[in-house]
Image (tube, rainbow, N blue to C red; front, side, top):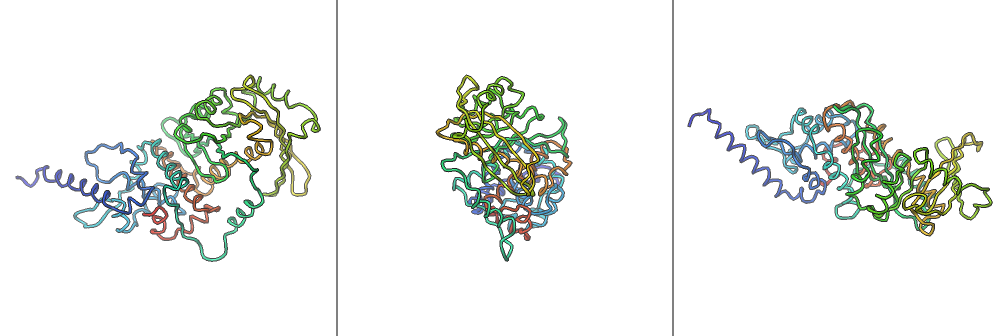
Length: 432
């Protein structure tokens, strides 16, 4: 047989593929790592011809690199991954180069090509599914190295806030739904808008979907929430989602409860709610609650009153509410006032004024504990990725990183990222 015959290289390549699959199946670390198993379920959209590196290898390296401070771009992620030890590469099923007799990391170009052509919905299901595995107890919680010495300042504040800001008795679990634009990213279809569901209190991201623009947020609620087990939960959404279709979806299909804000897009419902809630403070004294907050160089007083209603006002409606926010400086002088109206499917025996007030305040979890963290700590808005699914893919890995730190009980994400000094520490977080 001539030396230039292509048969021999093809046979060698097929043997390598079989060896990769056997090593991955026999690797006990892969069985222990829930994340590796989840990412292994993401379908590979590449053609089989010329395939050299398993998809899961790139995904695991990207997920681990995103945990570490400074790895906020594809170039930085690849540079960090290139220093991965041979033991770790063997455990995640990396390709072994027969000429070099060592496991190799895919090139930066391979990283970019794979991240730009992913099944992004499947990736979000995998990354958020890992968090749900930990919450349900079917997977071990992530373990992070900690800085020696006293407790970090933000961690101390989080402990103090938990002790001071206790939830009302009988509060149902809740989640906030809101969207965010990736300001620096562009694709062939324009800007990238992502809608996420975030658990109240814990800040764990439950799911994420992409929409064509800001106005498309309401159309993706079903796709976002349907894969999640939200039955019995309270979903808080802003006025953009206040539609009859969304209300019926949440109550009749998802068997959950909603808290929706009423504005000009539902004028008849808004005017009816205003009429039901009109009156003096004395008339609503028994169904009114007031909450005071102090922090970040400001004070806020939140006063909420309720009134009963029914389906004639809005599908599934059981109460309407008026929330007044009075804000000012630390001297106690009020300098601002805002009044908003809303509607909820929660009956009065499940949620009184104090419960609705707490849920509305917790809705800001999606801004404070997701959008702000991705922008400031992970520098998301500075990213200018413009190829395929890459912007959304990196956002998914940032969500995974945030979930990982939250599930470990860390309050300061930036501080936690700096704790992962050594490569092996980042992989050990996921049991790899």
